[in-house]
Image 1 (cartoon, helix red, strand yellow):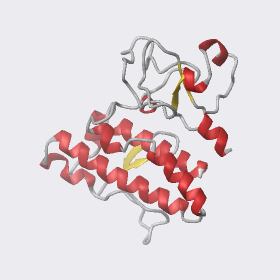
Image 2 (image 1 turned 30 degrees about the vertical axis):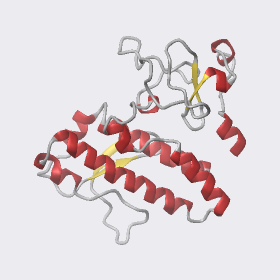
Image 3 (image 1 turned 135 degrees about the vertical axis):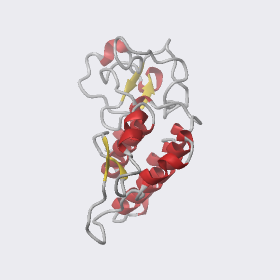
Length: 212
């Protein structure tokens, strides 16, 4: 389940970047004058606009075809929302495909993990804050404070809530990212301080620890 979840989370992270902080680049690449194009997210958190593979049937589920054709026919915000919904459908289909060989308990674990994350549409539409994992993060042991030393700082309430307690990010508290699933935890639930974190090479969150 963890391998499938990590694949899902990485692809989701890349797509969110494409539809939020890198939306201008995505908009330019999704040229309606080109052939049918798809928005791909990759497990390493990167993304690309590309043509689908020529094989029929495809080896794995593919993203929505021709997302570029609707670009100039609707408001940009609505078009990005449409791309987000289609991306959510693709991510879930991939998770079902890759999880088909899991047993019932493993599937329950997989989709419990998936359901902890807001959908791409929820993030793109602004229903939930842009997750810290979608932004270039600071060092893994540092709280999700800045994208770059000279860029905008994170503010109270930014990012996904702590998976353990549901608390939103606060600039007055230490937070730490799991090096295995990229989820951010408040220091209290992680039982971690900044001083302790500096001595830990790879921190594993409670969820990853219990599923190891």
